[in-house]
View 1 (cartoon, rainbow, N blue to C red):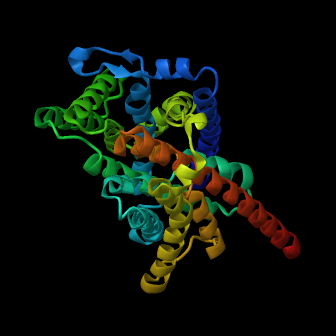
View 2 (cartoon, rainbow, N blue to C red):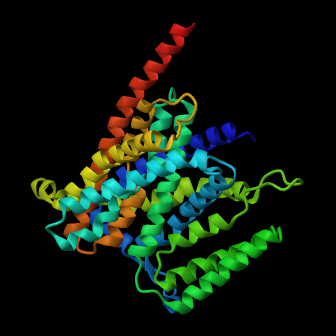
Length: 396
């Protein structure tokens, strides 16, 4: 499969998942704000699982800790592919999107800190506006940006994957609890066994499933957010196809897991994570909340500016080049798509804040900024598509 065809297939499949994500988020808000709110909250807080293994988690926690790890496994596989075979395989290809991704993480975090500097308890939320939601962004791109150059789509995909890696590192280093060394050692041994099995070209699911579950459980018990296990396992999965193989292991397992990840895992997380009771919110209080302002300004303003400014600096100072057919206006549009935070931003909100007022302000900020960025992206993508169409007609 050519890289261009593979990219098109990936974008199409992620766009479908993005539609399910948006629908689930809207459903979560409606359920939390309607007559079934108490029932929905009771279901979300129902505990399931063996306490002996420290797995007596609520259904909401199973969605964020368990199901979302599958989504991050997919992200890990995609990142491994980009590092080995794709747009991150060489420094020249990787420089611009990596720099743009870093700028798109640093500036939003800095703006959040600036707006919350007088409230030291709020500063823990600096990681919330750092993350781009790849599924949501690609859904908007698929619906409204069909005229955008393929190179710009690849740039967005690479940027979002690097962005997700940065968010995972932040979760692991900042938003995880105290580390249990014994559990961490077990996790490392499980990862090592998984890597050895990949190197020996073992293929049976009964080898990998127990190792993956063991790694996830050990990471969970170590005090690290278990989505990190998903990313590590994805990075350890082989992406280069052997001569006798029709598809590499990462491609095979991604195709099998993607329907569940996009159709169940991510929407289930969004259903519970976006469940903000709008009836209990005071509009003025949230608009004046520094947490709300920091998230909204960070995502809606900081993300696009950080991506565009850093990319321009890399081009000017290091001679980095845009992909073929891509103009700076396309990078600016990618920047607006980067302002759609959602899945990972909501996850970090839950990890950063435990009190209802701060968590509510953070979640409402993520929802507001993401939908604002989505609306702006839809408008500019349609305008850019019309511009490309007019340009093609003139060339004829």
